[in-house]
Length: 378
Image 1 (spheres, rainbow, N blue to C red):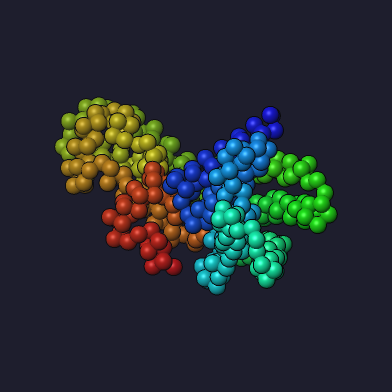
Image 2: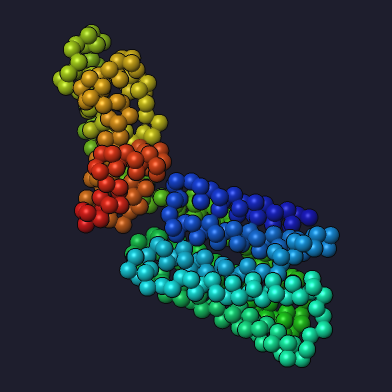
């Protein structure tokens, strides 16, 4: 009971984690998409194993389609595609990625054909037909025992194209965990087929190892690793004059509220304070920044903040703040130290709340998307 509960928790976590990766703008990239698919596949494999333990297939035979598909053939494919989509486009373009799915497609077609034969009641098969079925089954076994090791080994070969050492460490660890799991599963399956041994105990070890991989991916891959190395560097970059700005902000707090009545122009005292907060304190990096927060810092009303910004800049408060955010991203793009950094990470760390908002504001300010701007400034 406890064992199946642990498996069910891992299945739930794998599915939820995959959905989070696919839906959240924080993880919106081609490589992470395949990581989500990888977690979905591992969750399906665990679900299939739980169904077998609980004998679910007996009262619900229609669920056998889950058991009849070799989902394990998708694991090395998605893992390989995750790695390939993190490397240089020149190398990636040379890979025939559709080949990764041929063994799985073959497995699906073979199993569907066998199921249709059983449903149709075709039990008397002529001898040539038996030979053909045996040959097709052997081809299937060949795919399983050659394709999985080959693609895993080839994935290690592709890792050398990763340039970031921290990223390479994460990918190597992820690949090693999945490779160990798959090799152990292959050996166990091989022993069960050819030596007719009871493999229930080794399979329990495989299943519990799979739950560990899902938990590990959730903690290290998403919570701890994702954006962490970029985030620290970008935070430092955006706050490089923090020591100077702290002393400047002291001056801002000491002004008299009587200046509230001064004319609204570019020389307006409160506009100067706001400009200083943006340029020196980088307050725009706060994604929750609004007129009320600014008003509190300046000691004036939120309505007056809008009036100042609208009068001086001819634009609204949101666009005014987003302009600083766009300039921060442009500066990072132009800095060679951030050449390999994720554009979305730059946007989020500059204060944008989502990919959509970031791209829309950047396009409005520059006439180009962030990708176009980066390519034109290489």
